[in-house]
Image 1 (tube, each protein chain N blue to C red):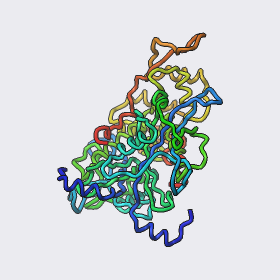
Image 2 (cartoon, rainbow over the protein chains, first blue to last red):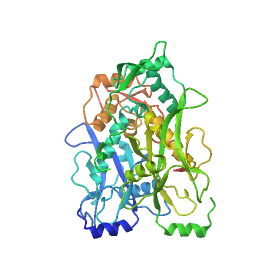
Image 3 (cartoon, rainbow over the protein chains, first blue to last red):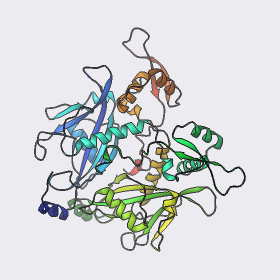
Length: 238
Length: 238
């Protein structure tokens, strides 16, 4: 999207508009294969911008609806679905998402069980697509789908956020203290140490805690991926 | 907050305003105890609404800043911090969050390492508080802090989202298929089955998959907490 400087200054005077969109994932068998894959419903745009491209179901936020209610209503209107799992995914607010006004989209996502997905409506302008085989979608909706898939992958694997609250070197007791502070309960030190030593993401160093005279504890470092600082598909574009 | 019906209809005509807020957690030792606990910086409000109450650092979204940039700038201006970990937490958009105009707040959160936290500025109107001992804050900011703490707890424990993509009864192979579809790679069936049997969250039933003649596989059911459908402190108020 090329914008003249006149357009840029016009945009700067308007407050950003708010919209709600939804990404709905379901497992479906593929016609060519037996193994099920992830699918999602999309809506064909019937007007500019991005006319005739497919887009996530969505619309503007009305002044009298909560974010979640707006997402649920929109989803129901386009696909007929009322998923049991509907959760906020992310707010997308990049400066150039839409060619006209700046739009901040608060995106919800739904995971749909097979029996729910079987009830979904398909029409000429609402269709299901394989999530890993999408063409160019309207706006930044490919990025939003990629982000949804990434969050889904993250959620099924173990998260390790404790190390973002610690320095570069730490004792095993300090890791336990993070967990205890976060969970609000004490943990058995021996069990925790055993559990932690079995994780591949931390590594013993040759250093020991300073200032402790009797048997100073060994320092460790985190070697796992910085999942928290890597925002997946969002890392490049914010 | 009591609102007359005149106020309600005035509000319904204004588009919702957008604001950015930040929750910053750091581990700090407590003066009374040796074990560190979670702390966060707050800003004293110097005008109405909620004058003299403490609030999360934040402000309106300017038209020419990305959401993340606005959060980082705001954080830097109030506390002097430039945390290495700054991530979107949630968009709060309830209808009655603010007594005047409807405000949708996109909240970012930062986890701050001890060496970063040591550099934080404190002034008369910017102070650090223990996260588990807060008085009544301005707006819905107690709820936002509670939600941040809940997300933090969730992140340190194992997540189990696969069961939201399955029916009430499933085979172990179907669980593996969810993981494979989500992770985009195949998993060793024997290893996966062993791993899954060791988790306390699924339970064998007396039922078997229908329509399979030779050795039909057993069906299981999920018995763990429905973490995905429980939105923690947000469950009540949306």
